Length: 437
Image (cartoon, rainbow, N blue to C red; front, side, top):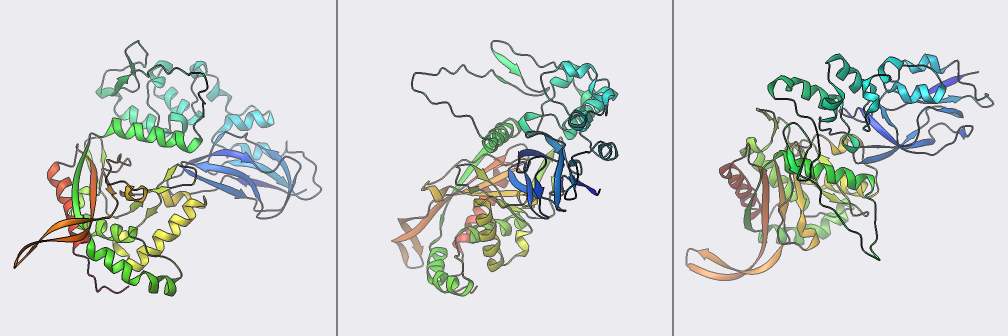
């Protein structure tokens, strides 16, 4: 009988693993070619994995909740009428599965026993076989391994985490994670106050965070621990921009069959300002500053669930306003229906968030690591403003808005941060009211 291996697909250049959220098919179910078999999650994006061949689902090699490496065999599919016998095929595929322990449990084959039966089995934390193998080779004890701060799902230690720790291991005294009444050491470099006790009163409702909210929470805490945040504010007169959009939005929607918002105009101004101040488009790696060649701007997008996701417009500086408008609309629409691809939320070098969409005047956003700056744009409101003219000062009604830039004070000083956000405002204020699109 013919049998086919179902592989965890590659979902992006930097995506190495995915979590199985839900199996849509049970063992023994008939599957059509290209029919979805399971749901997976990578970082913030959920997607379905279709079968490349039709047949019978003979064996599921992982359980819901398992973290699986890209390229691993996740299921065996047989041709119609095939018996659910996979003993012959699994030994040939098990070698391809990096996360060997779940496979061994599923098919009762003693795979990678040497990696799992070691000193790290007494830990309450989950470590992948690869991480444990690296730790064993480097002579890292269980206590030392548990002191490493993880950046993976549920703060798991990834390959990058342990390799980064090893690279700096000899430069600092070893610290063992421990909890006391006053503080908790969460990494060799960072100490924070212990979590406060939370009481639950009668009638209080307890709601567990969903997976995305947990990821957002961890990412926000990590960002505040990583970067000393500073925020600079500028008020901009965007009257010309507002009048221009009001003038062309009807004809644009009729011609392009989609709306034009202010977001692509903001992104265009940010991209132009980044070209003027390239040191705002950087990342920090230890004591090194990585200056990004590409200008990839993420736009924070609210989801119906209340969570947030940041799709990325790549090479924003190379797109005209029409191209930016179409990219913004497409990514925002697919974000709201959970159809983004993993690559589309990665690789950002700068982030824009529109707090004005919620009626807010301004905000102090948290940096989207490993970037060093994020710009918040507030609501546009009509205000009486002093207008300077050659004939003297006068008061007029203008469309005004605040821009607030949060930046990493390790590498962005007030001069750079303040000059950058001022330049963005200048581009918005000088918007050509007779521009064509």
